[in-house]
Image (cartoon, rainbow, N blue to C red; front, top):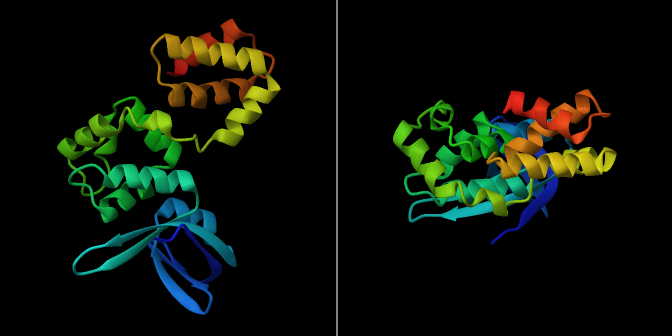
Length: 197
């Protein structure tokens, strides 16, 4: 119903924000991740998801489209509601959540308050194939890493994916590797990455 709400940040707490737009104050549920990105802003733009049930209407807001897309994927899993999805996103950043799902780490996911092992496993099973379709939140850092050493980065990434490692996890590790030493060749980058994967 609403794509985003842009306006003055009238009130903020770790779990919600009140955004005034067009003379109306919208009460928007947010994650800690979004809170940390907007807490000092005067004006904000939150990408929204509107949930309507028989007894209540709720607006959830996100600092990025990627975080909203992850939220929508999470609530598509049977047994995961809006508040559970928000709790997951308050515990892990979008890139951490992608890596947890990509690597199938249900034990780490169940560390989220109120989330059991069975639900964590169900989230991983249901979403593992869907992560590939989402644009990476780390697109800027991926672009930076690729622009500074395009051939070495691309070849190392392709090699790691061919070896069976998740693309998201491989990108994250390669960014660290090239940040530490920008002069690495493909082989050294792969070796360094393998030690961290």
